[in-house]
Length: 366
Image 1 (cartoon, rainbow, N blue to C red):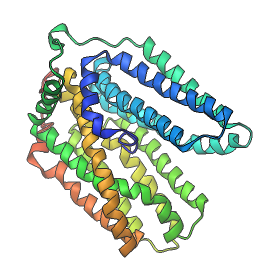
Image 2 (cartoon, rainbow, N blue to C red):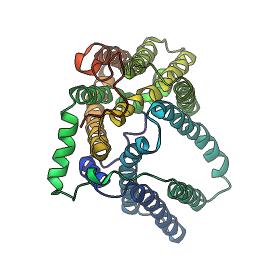
Image 3 (cartoon, rainbow, N blue to C red):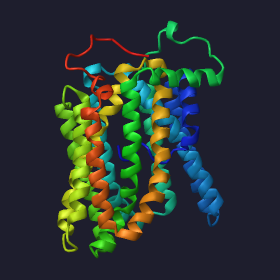
């Protein structure tokens, strides 16, 4: 959960979703990785020649974000085409576990090699990773959508509206996205304030801030492995509720800790990190209940709504954290998130997404 909504040009997200649904998704995945690699190559070449201007760095970051904005909805739309339905939740868990390993090893590897590698070496390593990813995707057989489900392209805005209608017709999923948007509004500013909590409130150093981030990543690893082995509750909305409860509890307890309680804060980070993979089950609900030809648009719309809540949340939380203190904002955010956790459990539309008796195999709602 923690990174999938970051670093996207989200105002263009719904439009990107139309292209993902209209064109070949394997080509999108490979093209996005190649774009990211080429952007890194340009940056490496420029760095070897002279000091990098700020405008070039910003342009490269924009290109990389474009590649990611295409890659994420395409990957989410492809997954249910190549995996059995009953393995989707476990796949989310193991994927998040693998991702968390990079969060743990990357800072350590960066610190180790920074003194002996030039910047070009790191960029070349990034390019090599993109090349390997492209080759791996090329080797995977991705089934094409049935011909009857891929009509000739309609006008662009009409296709965009069709994706919105596919989501809006399912009240439960639409309400779940609204819940996730509210969740992002409260949580994402907290993620930005993590280093300040470590240094300003607990009086730690950059090492303490890094330790908190590593504890969060270890929690993600454990949560991902748990979900991968367990698969979550049969009713996926209960797994989402558990995830939000864990996050809210970790934040609230962190806000109550005394200034000498950094060890307790690290433990809270562990719990909060473990909650992230469990929330990823929300993606499985979209994959199960939205027709494949609409998934690119639905995931792009979901990411856009949640990501647009982030800057608003940052503005709101920054003002309150300065006025009342970072620890009190952690406490208030935790209590708010605990309240949000009641929605997947109590809201009738969300509860109806996955009833007690599972729907017949292959049943999808457009």
